[in-house]
Image (cartoon, rainbow, N blue to C red; front, side, top):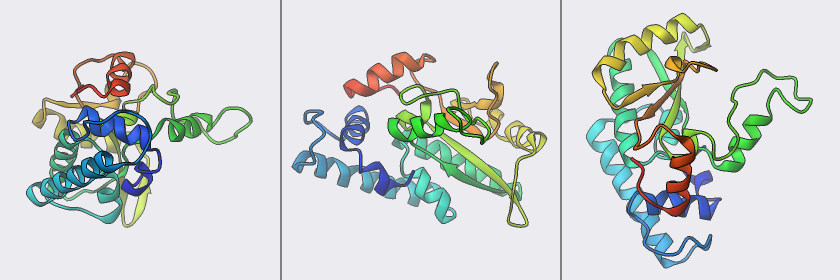
Length: 202
């Protein structure tokens, strides 16, 4: 999702802002002065991170700025490591609201004939907490889906970043384009509880 879409679910955005220390008000789903100030502070820090760690293609940028600041830094560092190898890698997905996650979950289910892309409902994915992003590999402008190429990319960057987790290491439903910042717990249930209370989890 883009930063502008992130703001359409105010309660969700307040939780993200509060858990990262930007918002000090009540989690009430109402856009008031405190939410506005927190949004401005979040945007300003995101811009500083971009200046310090480098900027990339528009699609990557629109997804990176939806992540929490620590994940923004790591995503930019990882993307830079990919591009220095000569690979055309872009971040094609970032933070998702619970509603967006539920829509993706429906793909391949309930009569939808497209292939399944996730086993996670809303609140069950690290994408829902601003921790995770998906990459796309492109060759001559074409999107590449070959697993071996994504595995080769992961092998280049994983040793460089100890706080980087990769979906290709999952035991079930391997997700080779998926990367995320290591959080305070491996339990999505625990992270969801902290996120919904506005408590730091990364």
